[in-house]
Amino acid sequence: MAESINQILKNIDDFVWGTPLLVLILAGGLLLTIRLKGLQIRRLPLALKWMVKNEEGGTGEITSFAALCTALSATIGTGNIVGVATAIGAGGPGALFWMEIAGLLGMATKFAEGLLAVKYRVVDENNHSLGGPFYYIEKGMGEKYKFLAKIFAFFGVCVGLLGVGTFSQVNGISSATNNFFSPYVKGTINIPIIGEYSIIVIVTSLVLAVAVAMVLIGGIQRIAGVSGFIVPFMAIIYVLSCVVLLVCNIKEIPDAVTVIVKGAFNPRAVTGGAIGSMMIAVQKGVSRGIFSNEAGLGSAPIAAAAAQTKEPVRQGLVSMTGTFIDTILICTMTGLSILLTGAWKVKGIEGVEVTTYAFQHGLPIPNEVASFLLMICLIFFAFTTILGWNYYSERCLEYLLGGKVDKIKIFRWLYIIAVFIGPYMTVSAVWTIADIFNGLMAIPNMIAIFFLSGVVVKETNDFFKRMKEGKL
Image 1 (cartoon, one colour):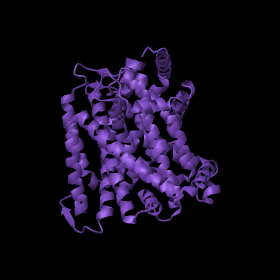
Image 2: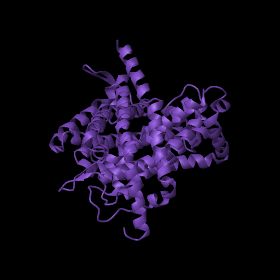
Image 3: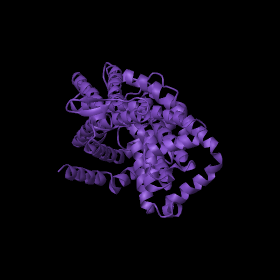
Image 4: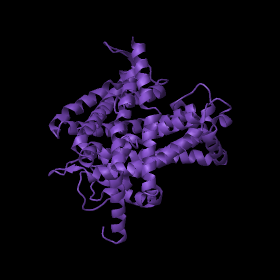
């Protein structure tokens, strides 16, 4: 019976994340890229400048940079380390090429999401901001489409509480700590009903639940503060590690680039027939890219709506740098590290083991140090993802409850409990259900992106006209 249910859920997951949804998200990014005349490339230097230069005099709860870090806290995670390895393993080196294409088009989508989030947000007398797809659907498309807004918000709550924000991240953290420390720390404890677990897993669940509680109880200000410190710090450490690896293997980079391009259009020529058609490379690269940067899913604009700004276009530019950092920068470096060291060719390893192999064989440091470095990055990336998705799901619930923030505290404690029990959740159906909800979030959001693309173009043209005339 359980196997039948798991198979049904897997079939639904494959359908939800099948070609139609991927095409819908890519088509939205392509449409915006054309209508905005390649804004994500032309205006990237300006966006990177504004990313660290906060706007003065804007309304909102947190700075633009803090809003970006909150969004990045949910996107920079295990997908950047494990997801890239999985994509290359299933689709070959060419999957990295298509991941970049998804990231490039996703920058335009993320720009539109950030712009619309600020344009249609609601800011009350206490400067509390609420916005995102639910409000740009309701206020931008009209009241008759409010059902789409509620569908998005419902799925957003489910994704945060049932998997992506809690169980999968916590399980990843406990697995990483257990794998690293198990040779040094022995012993297990039998927990009634739940079963027998190692001391490492139990200690990890307790420490993590307490750490998450201490941050979440402080609300958006504390989440933004912690994310604003951890995300840049860990991203810099991870990127520097990858840079050192690339420099140590610099002679192999031209060959790696050639393999990526060839593999994008003819995977079998690169893998010796081990990987199938070009469509598999496209599907794996695009889907992993979207999973990593979340462009089109509608999550990041919830954070963007809290930014202290009075210019929607400005926040849109800041928001799109998140996809640039997540996919174009971090995912590319992970992919190159895996290809340069030949980790993708090693049989018998998958997921995080592939990236671990790349770090161990590519960095001029002992294997134990390389493993520890990657474990720390995984832990903190997953920890900030837990924080980011709590914020997203709370805002979705706030919308569903009509702004009754007092009931959010109950949900917050449920979320903390889910974090605590996460390491003991081993049912694969939990992750599959969360995956389905994650995909379903994108449908109402992308409908709104298509519907409001004209608004995005008009706002953008008006903004840059005013900037040219010095009227900002």
